[in-house]
Image (cartoon, rainbow, N blue to C red; front, top):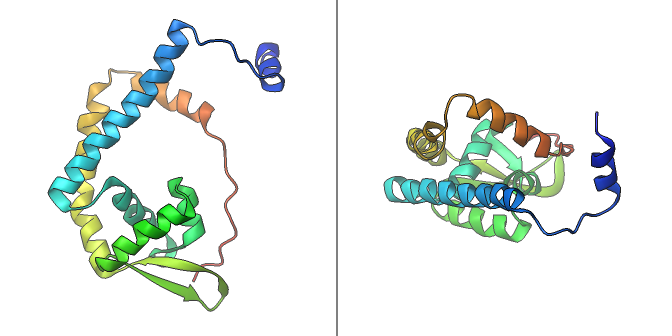
Length: 168
């Protein structure tokens, strides 16, 4: 249940300067994200010629029904603009890792589908990505930190509505 202070903050914007602890928490999250994702990206590029963003596309498609998702749904899950995703998918299509297709059941949008080559590339890169996540993040935490972080992050998530996707 939200406290009265939390409800008051929700109804009235609080534009006070951040105090030292608030700023340290905010900047710590930003730096941790930047440093961790940069290190993972560099490793994936070095070992597999695959950026972290490209890996994330392959990951999402590998989990999707028929290894395909509508481009708009894919962009939403990746927090990319439609144009940013289009450029990324273009590069992956050129490498033979993805293909575009339309669906007879749903002609509203284009779908991206993982190819066999894309599945192989994902399977090759996955152990590297998991090891890098452990090295750059998990292994640096102390006992109890994962529980604390999971609890904090869950409070910051906003559940999004899943778009209707008839599949194809």
